[in-house]
Image (cartoon, rainbow over all chains, first blue to last red; front, side, top):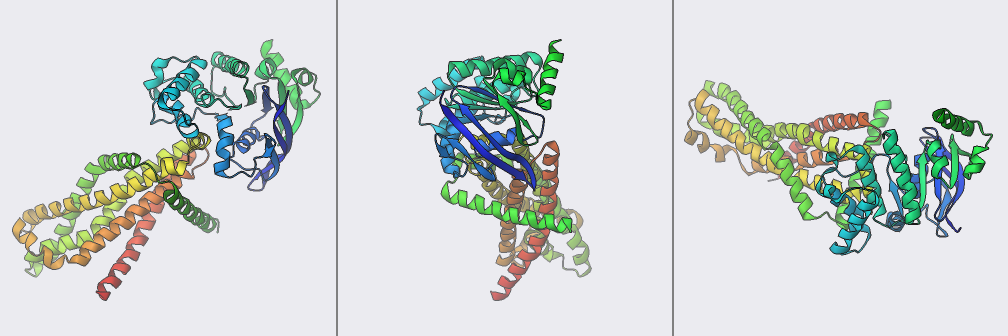
Length: 249
Length: 254
């Protein structure tokens, strides 16, 4: 499989506190990559560096053989069109209808006419298993789980190369969590989209990931495919695996 | 020392924010329909409060002047003195305080909530500029609406003055109005308008700044609202002193 993205020695500090201490890894096209770690280890910071919401202090982010880490806001538009971030919170715009929420990015990042745009909105809504009847509603009128799906639809409708999920199942019940995880898997396979999922759900990672990266205190402590992770001797990974075993038993 | 450092930091960030707002306005101004909708929203939500506060400001001023003026038997000048004082100073100042509490705090909370719920980051990720999409319409909308509201409030202050002069000083409407043009000169009117614009700018810029820079959780939204209210009060008082000096210089020059 071809390499689509590469992080090279990414470092990032906030007020003198080093959050990312030289992160390097590659992502292959079509893979589902899980980045696992406890809270505050810099998982979300890593994703925000990729889409330019934050800039790394040093290191390079290689996308299509170009270092995008020092791109200008204008140059980042192309990156953001192809690498769509689904936020930890649904981040839907309260004052707009759900239709306008999904169409927001399409209107600004594509040249689709109204008819094409309408089709794209409805197709992406269908892809996340939501019904068209809700399109005229405002975000406050639907459940949190539906809002999460809608935020995935809002990113999906741009036909991105890479979908980035920042803790997509936070705040959801176990049934909705399972449904969202299956949705990520299905979308990735159906649309041949590369997915990078930031999470602390090892159970789900073992189920659907092609590649797993484990972060601890700003460093990668383990990475590899599911089989390698299952045999890992790293204490944090063993703790995560133990939790999965406990949950299963 | 910590407070001073925080103040200097905020001041620097505030000017950088203003620079970004102005450069975005020059490069890509917001759509007019969004500005209209903001003006309408602010104007409608504050109309009743401004009417009441304006009316009572005028009433208080008239009662205060009536008590002094009666002693000199110059009740005929009540309308002129009261209206001039209200238009020139008290009207813009008190109504600006009220608007900073109502419009300023609301806008700051709204933007702060958008920031902490990642809506502003989402706007950037979806190819839009948050300054153009959400800050500028509110910024311009609040300036325009606040200015209109201040002028509107001063009109109500005039009505309050007329009514109180009739009730407390036995001065009828015609007598009240007769000396208004004599005492309330062009410079008084200019002072009122000038102050209204300056105060409206302060409210708009401070509430959008504190809302936009909020970060963290719900606590950050509360902090943004408090900072907006405190900063608006302080800057309105300081700007009032400063604009009074400017008007005085202009008055002497004329």
